[in-house]
Length: 102
Image 1 (tube, rainbow, N blue to C red):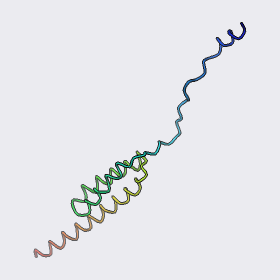
Image 2 (image 1 turned 180 degrees about the vertical axis):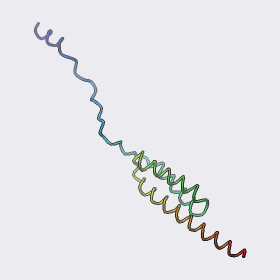
Image 3 (image 1 turned 45 degrees about the horizontal axis):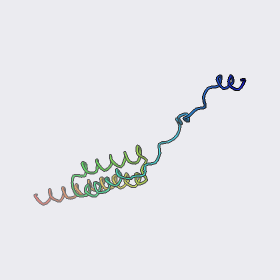
Image 4 (image 1 turned 135 degrees about the vertical axis):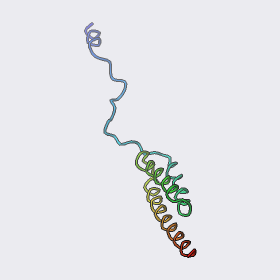
């Protein structure tokens, strides 16, 4: 009789664990955004670097900082370098085209 009275007074055992608030987000198993940023960075070397390089940088940044992709850091650096190099190539080609018309 005492056992049934004690059992009635105790709350049921928790079925779920309490949420863990300070845990970092899990690392993504796919590298989709980072992989897509590589061809965009390559295109940015020769064609409209501000557009394709910007898209590559944006995708790599989301992959690196939000999704925590493994290739995120590499993709971010490659996208930045390709964008800058593409702008330099565009400036050189534009300057040489201007000089030829004079």
